[in-house]
Length: 249
Image 1 (cartoon, rainbow, N blue to C red):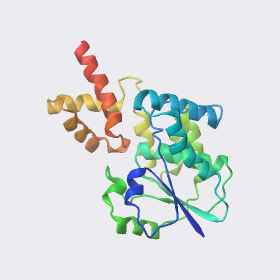
Image 2: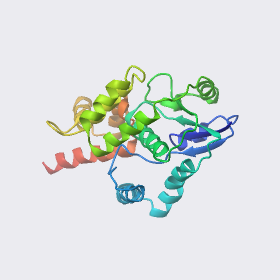
Image 3: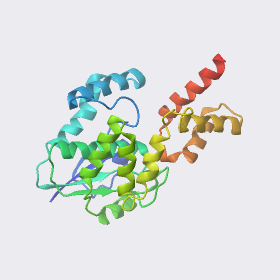
Image 4: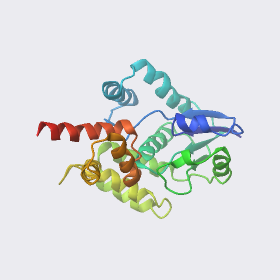
C-alpha cells in the first residue's frame, strides 16, 4: 500500500530516511500554546492565525500554504494508503498528535494507521536518531488502534475539561506509559495556586544558577522540563515575563 508519513516538524523532514520515499506531510503548529477553540475548523484556523502572527510573526498566507494545506492533504487521502504518524512523547508533540487524530476521526478516515515514536522519552527525541535509527523505528511499527480515544483527548484538551482529560490519560496509561506524565505536565501549567510549573521552574533555575543569561537558563530548563518539549521561542516568552516583572518591581 502507498505510505503517507505525517511528521512532527521540518527538522524530522530534513533527516528523514531517503528510502522512505512515499508522501510526507509536516505538522507546522504549536498547539501547546494559544487558543485552541473554534465552532468550526475555519474559525479554529482563524484564531490560530491571529495568535501566531501576533506573537511569532508570519502571515495568514504562509499559515494557509504551509500549515492548513498539510491538514487538507491529510483529509483528502484515499482509503488505499497507510498513515504513519511520527510524533514524540512530550506535550508539544502530543497536543499536535491529538489534533491530527481528531482530524482523521472528523473526516472519518479508516486507513490503516501507525504511531511511530522514539523508544524512550528524551528531550532530543527523533533528533537523536540517524537515518538508520529512524528506519528501524519504521520497521518495528505497530498498528495504532486508539485513534478515536486520542481524538477524544483533543476534545477534552481544547475545551478545558481537565477531569475527563486526566481520566482518559489514566485509562490509556498502561498502553502509553508516557501519557499520564504528559497530561499532568499540562495540568501543572495552569496558575491555580501558583504561577504554574513552567514559570516556577524557570524562576528556580534563574535563582539557583544565579544568572539571567537566557542560553544557560534555557539549557537547564530543557533538561529539567523536557516533558514540555518547549522550544527556545516559547521559553523566551516565559523568561521575558519573569524578567520584566522583576525589573518592574
